[in-house]
Length: 133
Image (tube, rainbow, N blue to C red; front, side, top):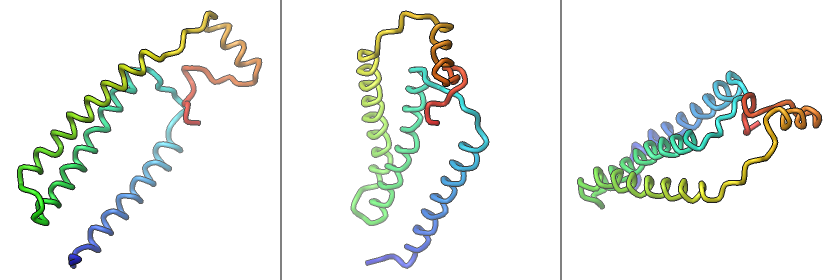
């Protein structure tokens, strides 16, 4: 049986998608500079930060399960905690695995590598490039 308030949930989702698209297009792509952030530590932090909204989504799903009388109320608290533990373990395992499979560092120094890039008409460096572009 559909709820008479289903249109409100759909409208909220549409507003959320539009807001995300605007933030992505306007703020992140047009108002930012080409800057690389390729350190392993920063990657780990962003990976862990992604667990927070994902845990919130699991709590919302559990809340709706409680509202539909399929789940007990304790699942609303247990779901994000379990998700956080599983997500954290997965992130730590993947980070550990990734450090074992790194490439060997190059033998040349920065100036030699930069000179080679400029010769290839590619002046972007580690300090002035966002790998997304």
